[in-house]
Image (cartoon, rainbow over all chains, first blue to last red; front, side, top):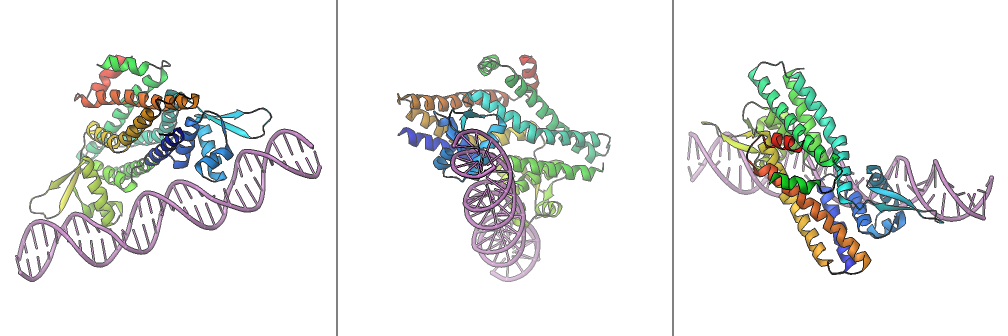
Length: 168
Length: 168
DNA sequence: TTTTATTTTCAGAAATTTTTGAAAACTAAA
DNA sequence: TTTAGTTTTCAAAAATTTCTGAAAATAAAA
């Protein structure tokens, strides 16, 4: 397989996966393109490679920069801005996970907590059953969150490996 | 807060969360409705409560049944089919996770594996760098999968708690 | 069998999301 | 300044996804 062909497949696959998980296809493709690039790329190069409009390219890049998984890179004597992807997989995977948790999961958990509180005093069988359902979701989420925090907030890159051995 | 109001908020919140994560809003709402119901519900009741069409209700229910997180329930002397949600949170959360992994993640990982193999022999700096990027994603994914399998394939419901203590 | 209740299907409509592209807003050099 | 290169914005168009509703299929009762 030709290298360029392999890179293209990586970009396409990544874009499709993003779509299925609620990440814009263009955003995922720009990310994949920068991940597979050896050099910083300008907006024009990204537009050309992915065959997308300037507006789309600009917005997608900005989102990735906001996520903190793509960096701006200044090249001396050039007025254009260039972009580079964070290549440390654990680093960017963590950032995406933390960002989505904060933005999408945390508000939901807050509401569930509120619902749980507001149904706590309901003594009807129906009320008690519903309260338990909501409470159970909360407890499981809290536990998973605790585990995720442990995994992520420890700096060591081989934490996962250690954990796997620990669990054997 | 009125119990019915709390349930409605649960349904709305769950539907919105689903949308953000690539799960159809109606599907997520039907799931939430059944989770919050004390009794089995018929298609007509679901249509009425969520104000959705018969086609939509039917398809959403079927998808949940296919996922294995909603069960059909026969009521003697009644021709209608009724539906109940799996109430054990760990059970349904696991089923959703396993299903999405198989359907959406595994095929992507297979392709990445193939890309990785096909770029292995490329000795150019560009080829080596790209190969490493893909390989790194694979390794991290494999590690996370191993951990998830350990968490999920052990039957004990308090495994998470044990693990949390273990990691302290 | 025929009738009646219920479920499933799916083409088209509606809603939502994504993308475009050109104008406006910047920014740095001349 | 003014000019030229670059980035940002956003209304409208396009693409995609979701939903509807009525007809077809299925299944149980008469």
